Image (cartoon, rainbow, N blue to C red):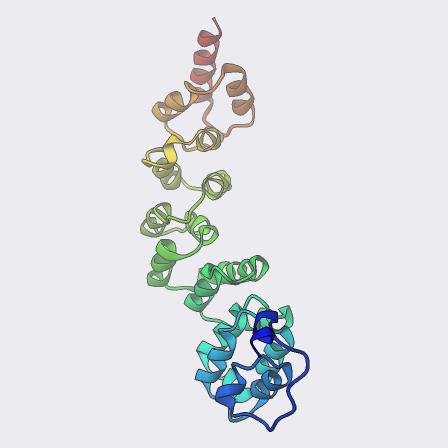
Length: 256
């Protein structure tokens, strides 16, 4: 039995009478695991013990997903969708049924596969317009970097400001947000004066392409960019004509 434990789940069950469910969920024999997963007497706690096993075969997870005795339980559904070996026909439909904060839990789990996390984020993004202010504030503070990036464009300044402080927010998400056509003056100014994001070169370049950056900030950011590169940026920038003119004069003077 110890050798089997090292090898993982066995394909053939030992020839002895059916063991109790409490033992079957810890068995190394596939037959025992399948029987436990499909048993109507399986409790939520035992189902969670089963799903706590990282070596659980996908076919056992599929069998468990068909067991209505336990799949009514929220914790079991989350554990099913979050299992690293969960087949996509099991995990994806479950994820799309989850509440806002259960989606967040799945998206932030370290064991959930990347494609399932992406689906959780996409499902959450599709719901943002119908979530309450309180929910959006919580998401801005605690959700994934991708969700925080989306919330930078929220019409409520408090949500946007909170999202800027999200520790999972990435520079890429900030750049993408400020370059969106619907990025308002409040976001541009907040990023331009933020202690962390206003120090990033790629963020400077993105801000110089927007229409709401102040002259003072534009001059400060442009000073750190080589003149020829600055001219390229300004060619496709939405900054007001007068600000562009002053930045181009600055670039010309630096060339001399």
